[in-house]
Amino acid sequence: MIAVYPGSFDPVTSGHFDIIKRAAAMYDEVVVLVAVNSSKSPMFGIAERVQMLETTCRELENVSVERLENALLVDFAVARGAQVIVKGLRAVSDFEYEFQMAMLNRRLQPAVETVFLMAAAEHSFLSSSIVKEIGRLGGQIEGLAPDAVLSFLKQSFANV
Image (cartoon, rainbow, N blue to C red; front, side, top):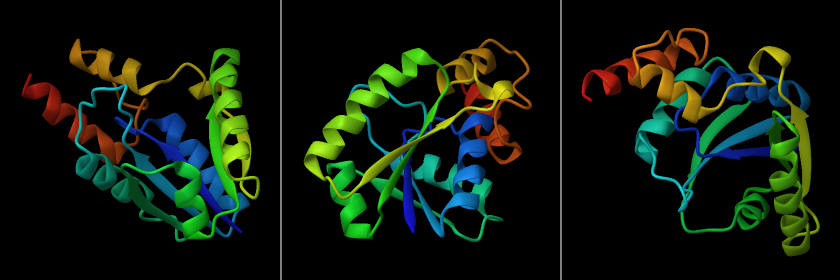
């Protein structure tokens, strides 16, 4: 069974990577999908985010990284042969939005299910925005993002 794990991943956090590893243990193939979110102004370009994820996930044999631009997630899932969309949840506030999206996706494509994975307790407070803010202000970001991502972050903060 093929699963798609979409997100903006700007940048990928340790919480994202935990969800990726857990999904990889559950499904035959996981496509991590770097999506463009028109309501966000990303720190990193889509090519950089794909590169961060490819480097982070390189040891997970059943995980690939792709990008999604100007298309619906469910259309990508169907075209790719995926039956599942994986979404990570940190708190109840995440659930409201993700539930709404899951219901819309089901209406658009009933053959694709959404599965929610709860964030591990040690990652439940993490978001890409928080990691960027801590790094921008000179705080310690080790452990908040995978090691492969730290160099991207530190280089970006050095240029600010």
